[in-house]
Image 1 (cartoon, rainbow, N blue to C red):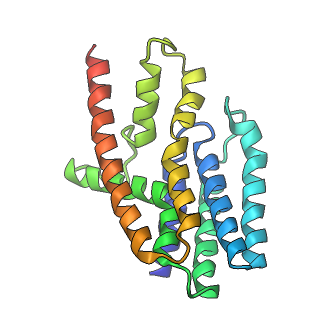
Image 2 (cartoon, rainbow, N blue to C red):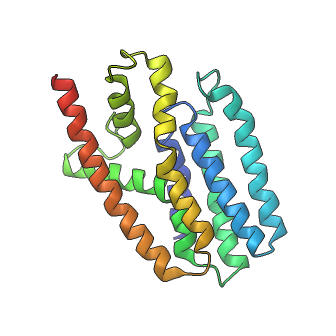
Length: 214
């Protein structure tokens, strides 16, 4: 299970790496949440470990956002995901009272995006590993690009789409910080967020279809 979890989280960071600054901002959000959780547990090692991840990601973000001067690529995405996954595992191992659901909540966005991508490809009878342009961030980008305010200028709509997605991955991380020991509410929060994600995805894909038809 540990191998499955680590590889799954590592891959999920790569899955969401579709817009300038998106994967890096999510890495930073998760890293900060884990460091604050470790701080509340007085676990200095994990505080420093996660702050190092945050600082590395910030250093790259300066050049990646908003106009994508450099990219982290597959190697960067998998590296960030791998270290964050092990940080979460160490958090639970070193602090048995910590809620595992709360730690999972911190990774909600990349994990949910990956699992839902697998689900919809299975439903559509497509190869699970085959890339497509129907990820949540692609739909946001499509919606922003088709907006009358930007006239399809991808140079600006790409970073704007990233900004639009900030609340979606910041809210789970904020909940993580406040639900360190509360498994029941953390699990309930995950269920609510799953429902919200699915409804939001359905609404967004219908709007994109209407815009494209127009």
